[in-house]
Image (cartoon, one colour):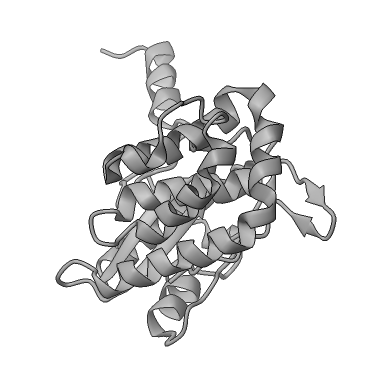
Length: 237
C-alpha cells in the first residue's frame, strides 16, 4: 500500500517541469482552452506543408508554457507528412545563453546542421569557407594542423572544435567573434547552399526539409548595432 507521501513524491517526479513531453506522451494535456485558440499543428504544420516557398515561422509564449512540448508534437506531425526534420535545442549547443551573440548562434546552428545532414548533403561549401579563414582561426581552434591535410571528417571535427571553444573557453570567445563577424553573410550563403543540397537528396519518402530550433527564448537579448542575436536568416523549410 502506497502512503500519501510516496504518492505525492511519485506524482511530482512523473512531471519534470524542465523536460518537455515527447510526442504522444499520455501525460499530455491540451491547454488550448486557457492558452488560446492557436493549434500548432494547424497553424504552423499546415502552413509549412502547403507553402511552395521557403518559410520562417516563430512560435512564442511564456517561459514554461509548454513550447518545447508543442514543437516536439510539430516535429512528429511533420515527419508523418514526408518531412525530414532537424530539431535541436539552442541552449544545448555550443552557446552560453547568458552571453550569446549573433555569431555564436550562427556557428552553433551551422555545426548542428552539419552533424545532422552531412550524410545527405555535401559539406564542401562550408568547409571551403572554413578553409579560406583557417589561417586566422587555427590558433583559436587550438590546433596546429594544416587544414588541407585533413579528411572531410577531420575538417568537420575542427569546425566543431572551434564552436565548442566559444562556450568552453571564454577568453577565446571575443577573438573568435572578431574573426568571424566580417564573414557572417558569406557563412549564411554557404550554409544555405548546403541546405539546398540537402533538400535535393532527402531520404526516400521525404519531400521537404524543416529545421526547428528550440529554446532561443532563453538567450539573453544582445544588440550589436542594427543587428541582434535573435535574427538569423536561414532556410527553414
